[in-house]
Length: 122
Image (cartoon, rainbow, N blue to C red; front, top):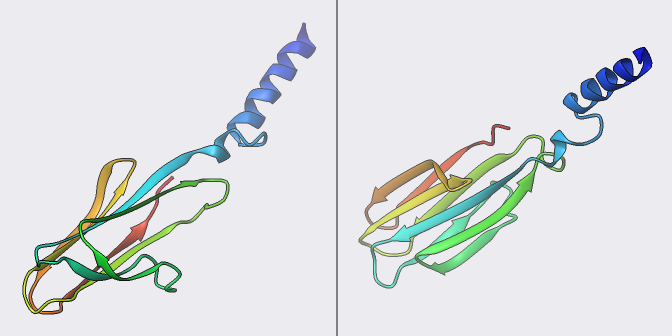
């Protein structure tokens, strides 16, 4: 009986530390949104600073989403930049984490740019 109790306690400790990978599969849905009041709503969009995801002359409203998990991405830096392609209007950028607004920014004017950034907190 004593061995069963010790074994049970050890399993609980290992699981709470992520030893068996239980805590590593926490996932979060990241969604980027860009809106523009100019017609047609053409914008340039960059999702990270290294320009890995770069969209030129994207039509708004524009939405891009993907899922991340803690095992693959222990530290996630979020970044969204957009530029208006018109000499009028406003542009709004938003980042959502699990359908909850994380950050947003709105600017108005000719060929304006805006950016938002932050980190995913696990």
